[in-house]
Length: 216
Image (cartoon, rainbow, N blue to C red):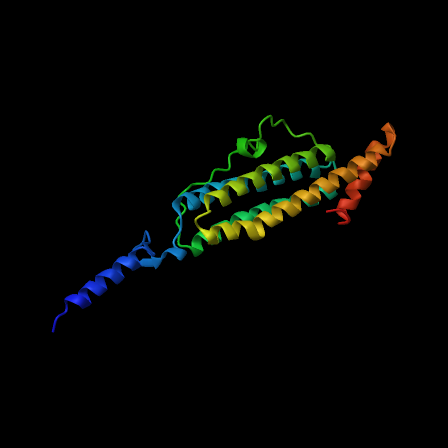
């Protein structure tokens, strides 16, 4: 019996399959659709630090506005909720890396300098007026949103990773930014309708609305 044609057929099949498979770092062959792109995963690993930075920045601002000398419980509540959302994004990314079997050897750094300065160009010490805090929060959200879009661009060859970052993470970024911008415009309208002496009262009532969940 002549096995030559059969062996040639097997060789052709193996060659074809090689084009559609990849070798995982831990060994084993997988279809390329479940393999990951190193440039994509490296971007995700580094971005997790940014999400934790944002979470700690929100906690830092919440601690400033929650102290009795400022006493703004409404915006403090919002900032704590925002910190929780940023932290949940980081956890989603870590869970995603675990799902794909990707190691993340980076030692994430939470230095005081990172908390006080988010890395935004021209960043200044926090001023505790609610309007300033909302503006700072908007800057932070735009900064993180742009970084997330960069991750999605890096994951253009890994559809699963790009999808994870697009929905729900990018969707939540856009919704959060829209709420912040709406709240800032509401506060400005309330202050513009008040006299100079009434502006602090307007800010107090705005904070009360935040506390009751009537705005954000």
